[in-house]
Image (cartoon, rainbow, N blue to C red):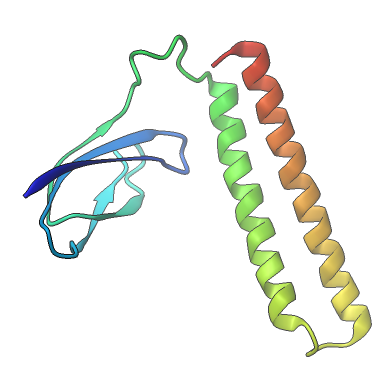
Length: 130
């Protein structure tokens, strides 16, 4: 069995690190919980060895509260945009033009909000270096 490391950022902003073992065949999907908020996350491994909060000790600065809030807002904005875009794609050709235009405008507004949130995050990161 080979050891693997999986890293992910939870919706709460926590960076989680999973140390696991995986065999040569396709590994089973294991559910691990965020060490901070206990949100579930899927990891492909046969055996989970540990789940910890990653601190990235080599990084010059840990993310501040504002950055964590911006990251959570960015995730939510993208999820909203993605959901609305999928609704729009599914509705194409099945509804009246006015209803389609209304939904298309909602998708456009969600995309703009997502892009603006990402811009704010990039500006914050450039300014604070966190």
